[in-house]
Image 1 (cartoon, rainbow, N blue to C red):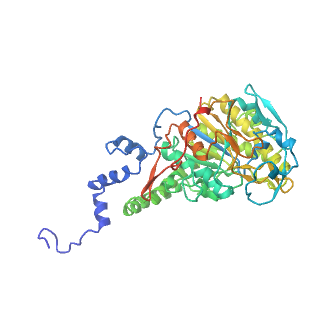
Image 2 (image 1 turned 30 degrees about the horizontal axis):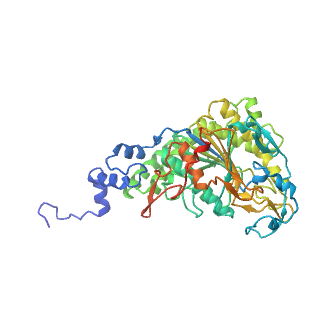
Amino acid sequence: MSKHLPPNHQPLSRREMLGICKCGFGSLAMVSLFGSLLPSCSDSSDKSALLDYLSRGPKAPGFLPRAKNIIFLYMDGGVSQVDSFDPKPRLEKENGEDPSSKFKVDATQFANVGKILKSPWSFKKYGESGMEVSELFPHIATCVDDLALIRSMVSNFPEHTNANYFLHTGSGLQGRPSMGAWMNYGLGSENNTLPGYVVLDGGLIPPGGLDNFKNGFLPATFQASLLRAGAEPIANIKPIDSIAGIQDEKLAFLKKRDKHLLSSLEGADEMESAIRNYELAYKMQSSIPELTEFKSESEATKKLYGLDSTNPHTKSYAAQCLLARRLVERGVRFIELTCPSIGGFDRWDQHVNLKTGHESNAQAIDQPIAGLLKDLKMRGLLEETLVVWSGEFGRTPFAQGEDGRDHNPSAFSMWMAGAGVKGGTIYGATDEYGYRVVDKPVTIHDLHATMLYLMGIDHKQLTFRFGGRDFRLTDVHGNVVKDIIS
């Protein structure tokens, strides 16, 4: 034993040594470690990017962005493309005939192939662009000159759960970060009193559950927060302590204890994220009630969205759309809307009774979405907000049984509007039956690459090292669909 040490000296453990040295050479090791996790810090000399990432403020995009925010209108269950935005006169001509006599019929989800089924709804041309839209969507039809319609979407999965994961995360497997988490990882949040990624729960969590909205292997702070429009948007949002100041004292005590625990855990991500979530939850107690209170909105605005509708499902989705606009105004980066719960037809998944089911869902969302687009445009927000409308796949041009349609990943329609989007554009095409894409196919990876591009992010550069390899939202695929960009 050294003569310079006291006789009762005990050797430092590794944990104690790192705790004592964390502000010295330990910090240099931390910088080296974090450098491998950054999307734009492959050059070790790029210290400013490292500091920018570690800060909680918004990050600078890689190039001039067209959009600052995204509103994703998720059509859970799969809207029929031939009944919405991709009219096919041949279906009417050959209605009731055997599809296998006309084309090769792929295996279907439920193996109950019926006859060729014409659309129960007529189509009309709208706007200066002359875009054809089904009578299911008379309100959205008035906005066609702001839409870039893609009729050539394809998916890799014919089943809801895997297709939902694919649409939301770029992988058909459970556990990957959702696109909203990637957006916030890449750009950060512009509001420190609200989450950067919000999912508005209309009453239905899609197949695959909350993993559609999770952070995956990204830091836990990037996962979605679920809100509902109404008096109780999130549980326990209102303080329950009756004694003035008692909550502040409790939070101060928790902060002190958390800080001590965090230092002993050497900065575990789960603990850091939990602490941040506590702090954010406290701030949300003041910001959320004001956010979800619509008293400041004019009667004309409420009517525009359909909040005065006699249809409770229209009113439900109208509240989501209005809340989405208010979230955009407050700088929330990514907002997803889920479908309202409609008894008997609570998703666009009409394997039977296509007419009643699609009409019920369309009545719920048509006016609110058109109101959202028009309201954003009037306020000058559509120029910096990207609105995306899509389901996870399409449906067959032939019946499932008598009056439904089965899943069809080989072709479906979706549209974008707003920041950087070339309105009145139709991109891609399907065959005469709307069954398969025959021109300019667009994959889910292409969709994600395009969304990231409009937000000022190169999808190939937004990476995160996990398990010994660099991951990205678009995996090793994806091309920006530049023909729909103005």
